[in-house]
Image 1 (cartoon, helix red, strand yellow):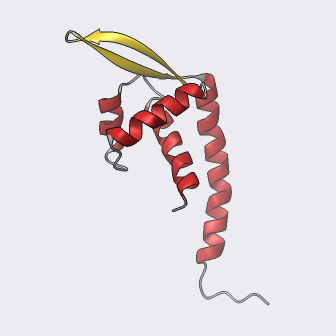
Image 2 (cartoon, helix red, strand yellow; image 1 turned 180 degrees about the vertical axis):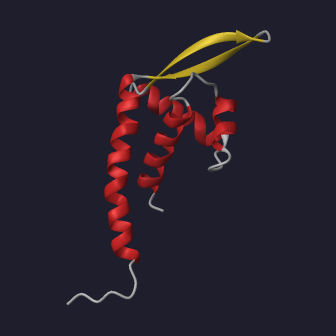
Length: 106
């Protein structure tokens, strides 16, 4: 898969992982694991990129004596998820065209 496309898909997946409630790195990885494998070395640059793009915000809170970063999706992040859903409809139409079998164009 093209790197740029994969990067965009991972960004949206991370946003989707935090859309219902704030979360932290390890939990995001755990929540995504039934669908795709993502390592910490992949996740944290994505989180920084999404923060820079103002698609999420970060706050620190103490947990068991340690500071933990919690990520919160912004309105812009929610808009990104919604635009991805619309884009995906178009991608699926292209996929259906490319994978159709047995039809002849006359």
